[in-house]
Length: 110
Image (cartoon, rainbow, N blue to C red; front, side, top):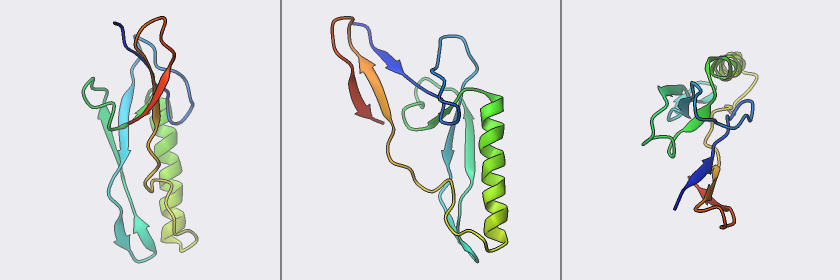
C-alpha cells in the first residue's frame, strides 16, 4: 500500500516534488523581552524523519523571505511598534495522506 503526502512550502505554497532542495524550519521558544515576547527561527536541512514536526521551505529564496520578514518584525518590536511576533506558535498543519489509489485523501494534523 503506497503512502503519498502532499507537502507545501509555508512561504510560497508550492508542492514538494521528488528532486528539489527543501529545508525545515520552526520558530524558537519565545523569550520575554522589554517590548514583549521575542522568538527566533531554527533552520535545518530536509530530513525524512523530522519533516512531520517542522515547517517546510522549498529552498533558499523562501528561507530568505521568511528571515527578512522576521527581521523586519524584530525591528518593529525593538522600536516599540509591535508586540506580537510573526513566529508566534501556529496551529498544526495538515498533511494529506493517500494510502492507495482507490482511497480518498485524509487530512491528519502534524
